[in-house]
Length: 117
Image (cartoon, rainbow, N blue to C red; front, side, top):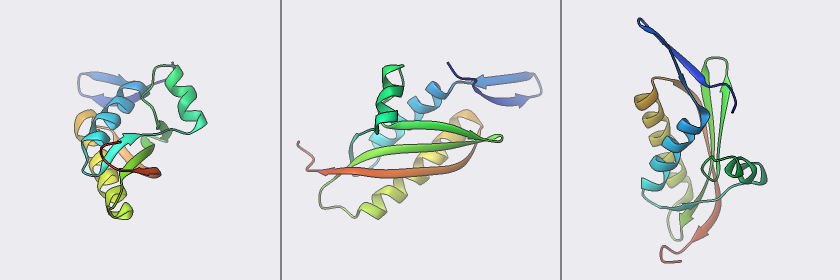
């Protein structure tokens, strides 16, 4: 397991694993309107084999978090709007639930599908 992301408080230091952050990202992304699933790159599939949710990569840039996620969007929707909405919601939820600052959320639309398939 890689070193976690640290948040300091008056009571001490809290370390949050990348896996925990990835789980928050996954739950948030699939709740977003227009997202019908997650789809990962080869690196994402390797991370999934180590227990991380599919299609999500968490990085660190100084004391800030970077997030890459690969989604499948419902056919017929504006891809740019869905991706923007997912990115904004993911950044908000990660900051709200962890107290970590999010530097960037990169949303990759890897596929388009009808909602029922």
